[in-house]
Structures are given as structure tokens and as C-alpha cells.
Length: 617
Image 1 (cartoon, rainbow, N blue to C red):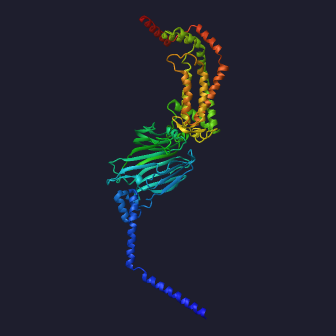
Image 2: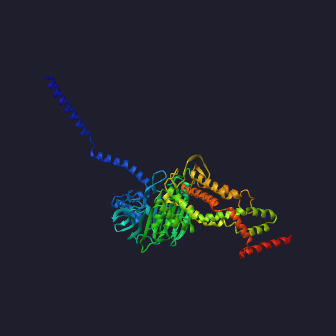
Image 3: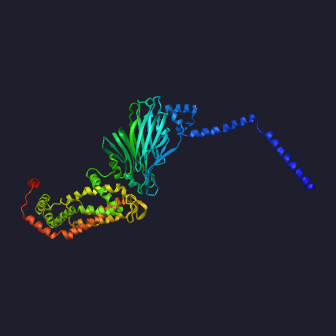
């Protein structure tokens, strides 16, 4: 009975305590006046923080996106007619992505321009994706004034994006609106498998908004990202290229320039390029290229900074330009296929050198690389070129052999007329004429080969097909091969050791010893170049100059010189007989030699000079 009574009392106690707590909560709740005072205090605490955030934003981000009358009024007070665009839901920092199988682009609502351009299926030297545009390294802006006295920049205004499909093409329209039916529009059309986009700038209903008294100005700027192992080598082939006056082209590596009637401008970053093309040429263009690499150990993010400025013309108060964007490889075949003269962006050489590259070397190498690795293709192409030029090589060595046979007689003349240079020259020319030899004969074959050698020198650094293609110890034939790192940097050489240039230098030295070493013991003729100095200088030049160059180029020179050595040995030991050459020269000396008008005139002049000299004595 006691336990039961205890339980009832406990229950009564709990209920009593609960009732007291409820009564206390009820009596301590805030009145209506207290709630209003608390809300006012909270508002006063939040407002200073909001003000601080707004003050930290740029002017173009201070607009409210709420569609109420106060926001519209505030936007219009700052932007005039374009205040409407700042009140739309698209007035945010969002981006729109469009892509195909080779290219991916992100376009910002703010400014309506590309904020990220990634080349698919390609990596940088350190295996990260290739970005031409990323993290604010590019800008595209139209600066204009309005009829109500404002000066605005499209890069600070918000566009409204709309993505649609037109067959297989992806279409993105970005509209900077004054109203639903009045706007400035950027239109991007991306096609499958294409690095080239259709791009247009047009306006609708803005003829009363644009101030036609002041020109509209288009500005495009980009800082080129480093993509290659050697930033100095990449920078060497990074430049601004533009076309003007309907087909002429020019380039700027560092500095500025200005030209009229611009058809396109390209920011070439060695193996990747950004190009803006227009169907309606810009009346004029101003271009700036700035080198951003002062110290190769520190400045390793960007190569060069490019900027271009063009005036835009209004027709009937409206803009209407059809253009194209290209973001892709600096590949001759790809650029040439667009038939827009974009192949001129490639530094293939001028005149005959460019012709040899375009119509001989590039097609031939493209054929080879389709069936074999890049390194083997270089060797096969080099062999084919050397065999093609072997008759010229034969003529060159034949001339050298004749000069070698005549060397004893020339030495005799030098000794006999050592005190009479004029007479010595006359007798030497007579000897050459009778023997049918000429010291210049060996130069002519070398001059014939020069266009091919120079064309190849231009081809290899620009061959996109060599990029990241390995051969033997070289992991990338478009960059230097490396067998060792140096603990220090050698001026003009670098901080590493490349093997292909060393082997090519050795091959050059051997070849020069075979062709010019025979004459090293002979006395140096006055006025003639020091062949011994040249023999040592050329391999050293190759060693230093090519240490940071594309290993594919060094592989070509190595292969070329090895083949040349082999051909010289064949010609010397199995084709040319110096005894027969000597006998032939002796027969020629016995035959009466009819002099040409030029040779006869030269001899007469020398004889007259000799007579005048003797008369003065």
C-alpha cells in the first residue's frame, strides 16, 4: 500500500513541476513590442555585413537581379537602356558549355565571351590538358557609347544564353538585351569534328541606342600559356600573325604594328593557335605582342601577351559582322583545308623555301608518317632527299677532286709569283681555264642544295605530326632529347645534355675532315676563309645551337651527314679516279682554249693593270 501511495505522489509531483515550467515559459515570452524591437536589432546587425560585401564587388556586380521597380531603376541609372539586361535571371556568373569531339568551350554570361577553351586529345609536355583559354588569360570586349552619354564595355555586362541544335550543329546565342526584342547578339555555331566555329556579332533595334558619333571598338587580348618542355624554344615560334589588303600577311614576335583592311588575326603559340577571322575586313587594326619571359627559370606560365584593336562600323545604326573563331593545332594540313589563307600562319619560309615545304616536303612526310613511326619517317625522308640530290653531290665532289689534282701546280704558281700578286692571279686563272676547273664550281652545287636544306630547317620546328612522338631515347621529336641534367645553366646551351646534337656534330666534323681536311696543310691563300676555323666552328655551332631545338631536326642532320659521308666514300673510292682526272686535265691544257668575252675582258683588264703597275716602277 505504501509503494502505491508513493507512486501517486510522484506522479502528482511531476505534474506540478511541469505545470510550473509551462507557467514560467508563458509569463516570460516576449511581447509584440519586444519582438519588433528584436527584429529591428537583427536587421541593423545584418545590414553592415551586406554593405561590406557589396563594396567589395566590382561595379558591374552591384546590380540586383530581382525584377522589381527599384532594381530596374537602379540598373537603368547606371547602364541606361542596358539596365534591363542586369535585372534578368541570366545576370549571374554562370557559364554555358558547348563541345564536339575535338574542342570544348565555356562561355560566360558576363561578357558573352569564351572563358575556357580546351583542345581535346592533346596534352602538354607535363601531361595535363591543353587549354588555350583558362583562368582569365583572355578577354574580348566591345567598347561603345550610347545616345544618353554613357560609355560601356560588353565585358562588364550580362548576356542571356540560349542553346539550340541545328542538325548536327550546336548553336549558342548570347544576347545583351535592352528589351525582349532589342539586343546585341553573339552567335556561336559549333560543328562536329571542327576546330573552327561560325561566329557573328549583330544588333537588333539598337540604332537609337548606339551613339554613331563615336566609333565602336573591338578589343581582343590573350596571354599564351606554356605548352612545351622548352619555354624558350616555344617562345621562338610564338607570334602574332595577321592578313591585310586581301592576301598579304605579316607577323610580330615582339613589338607593335598597325595595318589596314584586316581579314584575320592569329595568336600563334607554336603548336596551338587562336584565330579571329572576319568576312567584312576591319578598316584597320592595331596589334601588340609582348614577351613575358624575362627569366626562363621564373617566368614559366606564359610565353607572350597579344592584343588587337579594331574599329567596328555601323550600317543603318546596327552591327552586322559574320566571323569565325579557330581554336586548335598549328597544323599546316588542317589550316590549309579551310581555304582561308591560314597556311600563312605557319613559318614555312618565304619564296622558293615555302614552295618546297608546301608542295614537296609536307605531302611526302605526311604520306610516310601515315605508314610508319615519326622517327623512321624522318630517316626515310632524309635518305630519299639525299639520293635525289646525289648527282649534285657528285658534281660538288668532282670539282673538289679537280682542285685537289691542281693543288701542286697552284702551289708552284704561288711560290713563283709570291712577290707579284697580280701576276699570280693571272697565271692561276689561266691554269683553271686550261684545265677546265674552277674554284667556284664546287659552290654552285652547294647553292643548289641550299633551298632544300633551308626548307627542311623551317619544316621540322613547325611539324605538328612530330609533337609527342618518341624515337629511341627521345620522348618527343618536337622538343629536345635529354640524356642528362646539368647542375647549372650554360649560356646558349642550357641546363641539360641532348645526345642527337652531339652525334650530329661528330658527323659534321668527320665529313668536313674528309672534304676540307686534305687542304689543311696547304698555305692559306690571302682573302680566302680560314677553312680550319670553319671546320671546328660548324660542329660547335651545331652542338650549342641545337641543344634546345627539336630532336627531330637534329635527327635529320645526323642522318643527312651520315648519308653524305657514305656517298662521299662511294664516289671517292668507286666512281671518281683522281689519276684519270689528272690525265684529263693535262689533255685539256694542251688543247687551245677559246676564251669567252667576259674572261677575255677580265684578262685584258688585269694585263693593263699589270702594265700600269710596272710603268710606275
